[in-house]
Structures are given as C-alpha cells and as structure tokens.
Image (cartoon, rainbow, N blue to C red; front, side):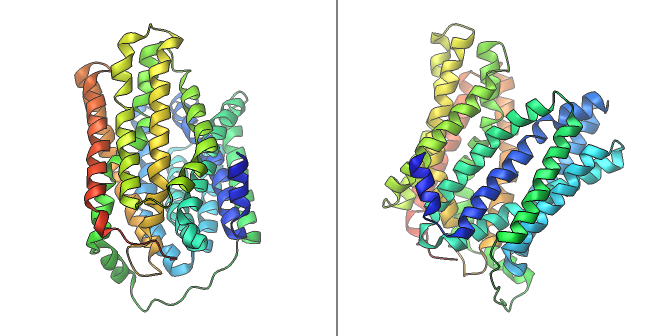
Length: 405
C-alpha cells in the first residue's frame, strides 16, 4: 500500500487526477448497475424480457461505440471527451432515479452506455500520453484504483439499497456530477495537433495495421477470462457453498491482492521482454480455472467449499496483474502518435464482442457438464488462457517498443 501511494505521488498531476477519477467512476457505476436488474424487474415490475432489452441496450451503447469515443479523444482531445462522458452518465443515472416509463428507462440506458463509450478509451489514451516511458506502471496504478472502486461501489450500493434504489441512483448521479466539475477544474488542457486526415482514414490506418490486429486477436484469452470473475467464479461459489453471499469475499480477495501486489509486480517485471511477461500472465490466468475442478472433490460443502474458488480467484488475479498493465501500455504504440484513442477504441470494441461470445461458450460448457465446477468449463477457460499465451509468444518480434503517444 505504501509503495502504491509513493508511486502515485511520483507521477504528474494529470495522471493523479485520472487515477482518482477512475476510482470515482467505478464507485459510482458499481453502486448502481449491479442492482439495476432487480429494480427494473422488482419495484417497476418489468418483464424479464424487457429488463434484458434495457440492460442489453445499455451494454450495446457502450461496447458498440468504443471506436467513436476513441476517435473523439484523438480529434477533440481526451480531456473534453472524459468530461462529456461524466456529464452524460450524470444525466443517465439521474433518469434512472426520476423516471419509470419505458422510454425514459431506454434513454437512461443509452446515455449511461454512451458515457462509458466516451470516457473509457479517452481516459486510457490520456493516461498513456501523460505517463511517458512509465506507461506500464501508470496502468498498474489504474488497475488498483479501478478495482478499489469496483469493490467500494457494490458495498455502498448495498447500504443505500436499504433505503431504496432511487437513492442509489441519485447518489451515483451526484457523484458523476462532482467528477464532471472536478475534471473541468483540475484536468490539464492539452493542445491537439491537426492530423491532416479524416476519421475514416484514421480508422483504416488502425484497422489495416496487421501487428495491432494480431495483438488484439492474441488477447482474446484475457478478454474472455476477465469476465469469468462475474460469471463462472460466482457460479462456482454458489455451487460449492449453497449461497450467493460469499461472492463478495471473492471481490474482496481480488481487490486486496491488487492493492498489495500490483505495483510491486509491475516494477519487478518492467525490464523483462513484453511478450514473455504477457504470455506468463495469460498462462497463469488459464491455470487458475483448473483449480476448482481439481480441488472441489476434496472439500466438504459449506463455507469451506469456497476455498478452491478463492484460490482460483487469487491465482487469476496474479496472472491478470502480470499481463494487463503491459498489454495496455502497448496498445497505443502500434501506430503513429495521435491515434492512441482510436487504438483503444478498437481494442475494447473487440474485447466486448469477444467477452460476449466467450460468456456464451463457457455458459454452454457449464450447462453441458451440468455443473460450474466440472472439468469441461475449466478446460475451456484454460484453453483461452494457454492459447493466448502461445499467441503472445509468437508475436514477440512484432511487438513495438513503448514510446510516448
């Protein structure tokens, strides 16, 4: 923890602001969104199909427009796009608090999703630019602050839910309003040099950059396995303990490990070849999902049954901490300066599509095996991790040197 704080203080003010902004963004997002489906289907009485459509529209508005947000960051400046994203999410979450009609709910879903499409690639592009040669360490800190917000948000949301969902939505909207004002006041303005190209030309340049596309495809395993923290591991915890409550313990373990180890790990590995480091992290992530299938038969049902899942979550977390900062540090380095936002937009658009497909495949594996702790879903997850690790190693000679973007 002390090492993390020292690292934060060693970065320029802009990086520190972006880190704190991400803490606030994830806190506000996760205090509301995990409870949204229960509110729509319970208090408002919407059908399960309509709840699914509203949630799907929110997700599609975000994942499908990442490329637009990334291009906007390159063309208009990441600062303005980040601020616009926070402002839109203020409006979107405010509508969830005030509206009950289906049109208003759809408007809230679209605006809150569009907000994420704007500031997610923009904040990463800005961070990449400001961190200079210390990109990997900056993204390691970014993970720490993001994960902390993802833990604090549901805890705060659970408390606010005792009063009512509307209070949670109001608090989330107020938090994003404060973030909007704060970014306006303290986030430095950076001059944007005219590129002399069109938006379509920028997209073509990124989408025809073969090393970048190969790298994006190679990271399919990371995309797929990250989402199992929200799908497979909770299902395994419920299966082995008979309760969904211990899921909070999983997130607490992941966050505490991240706080204690992320910065140290990234600094230790910074001198190693990027392909080797990323491949090792991906392999560890894949290995983690074999542990519940291997250990579940050895533990009795009840709370003790959570041990294999916690071990899997811990090993998975270490693998992600090894790989992810270096992956993010490379994304904006494949093309010319000024296209980092577009690169992040393409990369996270691909991640959203891949994650949806992987969730469907892993869900099928769970159903086919009849249990989330069976070997079939474990082997599918391991194949994602090991396959991406092999792909990363094969790309060793095609990875760029990290340069300021």
